[in-house]
Figure 1 (spheres, helix red, strand yellow):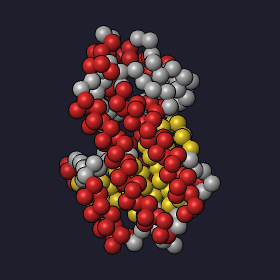
Figure 2 (figure 1 turned 90 degrees about the vertical axis):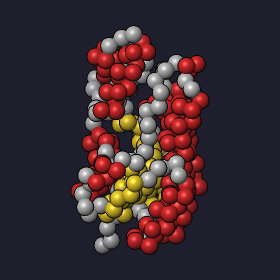
Figure 3 (figure 1 turned 120 degrees about the horizontal axis):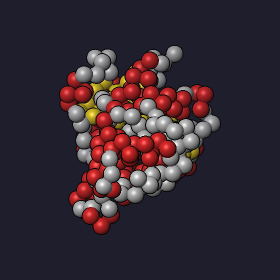
Figure 4 (figure 1 turned 135 degrees about the horizontal axis):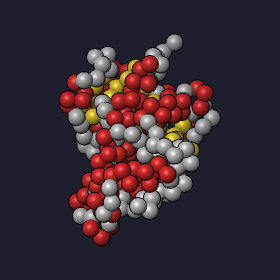
Length: 254
């Protein structure tokens, strides 16, 4: 039986690294790309690894050409790369910061899907998983570029599901809530500064805004990715699936 072939963007650290480890644990062949050379060097030697800017179309095209030679196809794409972008009121956001956030979070996903689909269409199967966010369901104050990109990711996913479905390709969005780790810590600190509050108060507000009263972990998100890429989810497509402890109030009043 052929191993599942999985490509993960931003796969050397954070949520992407945990996704890669979860897929590898199932016996999948894993290929990770990341902009962080040190994180890539720390990945297991049996993973395929590439340092790559997800917004560089020439580099993405070259990656998929090499992947076609090495693997002959692709079963699962996890378009996971993203950046938090600025934390500020909309009128205080510089256009350059807006453009960079949209480029990495949205255009990067578009490019990887653009080059993955021909491989999947040729084999008439595949799963496309886009990492969105609960910011792409509710919107978040002081996070305009990030929220706009994540809403757009969900719209992109819906279109992929409709266009690629006749080829046996499924597409879904995973929308993490607040995920424990260094990235959310940076967001909490910046939001505390914008609101004149404290990191602990912002944290408590976010946790209180979920029915489970908790943040989620990268392992929670990775488990959903493995499920959606599996045969157990063969009839699940075009869905926006939150892994967030059930967010009720995305704007903590703190």
